[in-house]
Picture 1 (tube, one colour):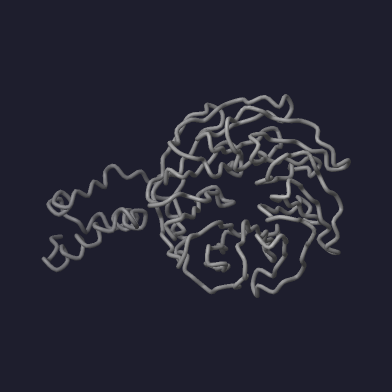
Picture 2: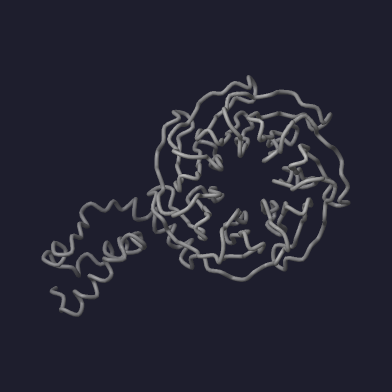
Amino acid sequence: MNLTNKEATALSSLVNFVQTFQKTIFVFILNHEHEFDKSVRKRYQIDTSKLDSRWINYFDKIIFKYSKYFKFLKVLRNYGNWITSIAFSADGHKILLSSADKSVQICNAVSGKQLQTFSGHYGWVNNARFSPDGNTIISCSTDETIRIWDVKSGRELMKFEGHNNSVLVVDFSPDGKTIASCSSNKIIRLWDVASAKGIQTLIGHSSIIRSVQYSSDGKMLVSASNDNTIGLWCTTSCKRLKELIGHSDIVVRARFSPNSQFVVSCSADKTIRIWDVESGKELKVLNGHSGPVNEAKYFSNSETIVSCSDDRTIRLWNVKSGNEIQKLEDPDTVLAVDISPDCSTIMSVSLDKTIRTWG
């Protein structure tokens, strides 16, 4: 059948949304192909013959899952000092915060109510993480120490000393028996949790190491550095397996995908990059941020990446296509983000010292 001018205009407007909502549009076009005559399809360059039904079905699932998209819900809390990291608990009911006020806090993820405070560091706390079993937390600080705390009592259980500069990020191994830490002194250290002793030192980066993370099986580490590179390391040999080169400025964060087959990195060069772990090859460059990118991480379903930036935005990206799905605007520089385990909520912390909830 032929479309009226009004219908053709409506279709034209619809097609203009392709870059933002292409998955929905393609599903619609495929399901209504019989309604579009050849002249209209040619005029608006709609080539339905190239649409693979399996591809459509795949994106249809994503559309269903993210049909509501994310929106700002509320300021969970005005903290009163700069928050340096945020992390959900495994059940999604609590959030863990590290701060420039030298403390670590656990708060209710819905109300923002403070549940536990951990005090003992003598400098800014740069990062904090829950242990795999959720019974303890680990923190690191500008005071050059790493500390383990009991979640229930708030008591300090162990202190790890050995770095001779600010410790920037820490991570538990999946079995909770080992800790990896990175610092401003260009090295990664591995620690035995039971004894609080250092067991290995990994050397290879030529500048400050900004992040370190274990793979899901504990056999590898990924690191990000001010030397513009990403390192992949073997936790058994403590040798660098690969050096990922592509960013043109400081690499702020590098994180494994949930299955550890890929790495996502973000940089002061304003880009996010996806890498294949086995080959070390760069697979995609995600462009869109207009300022340094402070965080990028996978959703637990591996289908989406969330990022935040000095440009005062949080962005969602489709992993398969590399396209930006959504942009969320914040009043100030967004320092860090985390996603709830069920992928329904994003928490962000900003330079204005607030915690915001998006869902």
